[in-house]
Amino acid sequence: MSRAIVIGGGFGGMAAALRLRARGYEVTIVDRCKRLGGRAQVFERDGFRHDAGPTVITAPFLFDELFELFGKQRSDYVEFVPLTPWYRFQFPSGETFDYGGTVESTLEEIARFCPEDVAGYKGLLEQSRKIFDVGFTQLSDQPFDSFGTMMAQVPNLTKLGCYRTVWQLVSHHLKDPRLRQAFSIQPLLVGGNPFDTTSIYGLIHYLEREWGVHFAMGGTGAIVDAFSRLMDEVGIQVRLDTTVDSVTVENGTAVGVQLEGGEILDSEIVVSNADPAHLYRKMLPEADQKLSARFKKRRAKMSMGLFVLFFGTRRQYPEVAHHTIWLGQRYRDLLREIFDGKELPEDFSLYLHRPTATDSSFAPEGCDSFYVLAPVPNLKADIDWEAEGPLLQERIVKALSDSILPGLENEITADFFMTPKDFADDYLSVAGAGFSVAPIFSQSAWFRFHNRAEGPENLYLVGAGTHPGAGLPGVLCSAKVLDRIVKEPHFVHDRKSEAAVTP
Image 1 (cartoon, rainbow, N blue to C red):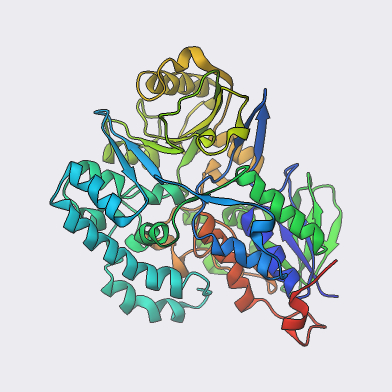
Image 2: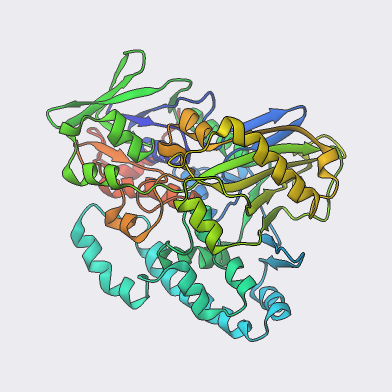
């Protein structure tokens, strides 16, 4: 039987393992964490549960597909529930803007702020749909390892104005500065600065509108558990708490991996769900890399870092939505300091997650579970996180206590945090970046790290740092690309008959 090794058990790695298994490969996942999920780890503290990874579920069909490969239903493993609103924006003035639900409800909210932007939003939605039809529907599962593929799309992308930034796209349609902020934050969900990120990523707006925003009951960790159960049922081997040191290459072909302890695992193909910048810097000798990979790893602009504060509260805050975007006084200048600065800004904007708004199992009775995420500079900046981490936590808690979580300073409990240094140490993320390489135009499509390795044969890449990009839809689509570029296992003659592999 043809063997495949998947390095890393994040969503890209798990999706790749399932797709390869459905085609008949004997698959082993090797992950350095004690639990599958990659950055989607689960933390338990004093009866409070916290998802450490992505919490916004869009394009649920991409999850459904992985179960359907084996004739199963995702709903039998994990329940998705739609949210309304999708996000609540909290402005410095205290005003709130609820986004999500029907188009009509969104237009009503827009009219409260700026009636003339109602027509502008309709234009923005239509432009986002056009970008979505090309960027997601046609290209998200297409390999971009040929420059000709890229060039063939230039007329479409130019016609759609994808040379503009997300901020320019939104500002073209909306006039109110608060609404411009609210409708331009999507790139931050995949590690990009709206003022630098190509408007290709404007498709996120229509993607949310097409399928809505969902939450997995039990949290993102419940999705990981569902995939773990499915992988066990179909015979995928999982090795946890094990770090891959390098990819083994013979005569220009990947033939397995070497673990940190020296053990060698042989395989016909290797799929890396590791950060591509780490793969090319630490796991492959330069002699086994193409010039394009050497150039990209040296010039890579990484996404911002993340400071993530987890905590419980001794009381509940029922007026706080499931997802809140808490915006600070500054926007453009703050983002510039986060993405390009060398010091920690004094102020911040925040994403606040309150899963107990939907699922009471995240906290003891009468309590709430929260995490708050602050975009911060990555490790390219000279920040002493051991000293600055507690100070930033103190500032964030005070800001929330003075606004949407009154009395938080006295109600907070079981608190802890992660910094970019933890991302580097725990997940081997280059520069402690939260989303691998940034989604700027010069790091998108053909310019991004390719799904087919720019080096040895039979080495493939999935995950946030490769095409089509970060975020759960992008990561899951990166595994779909493998269906187009990975060879069939030796013994398979009828793929359909092999798809329903059972243990």
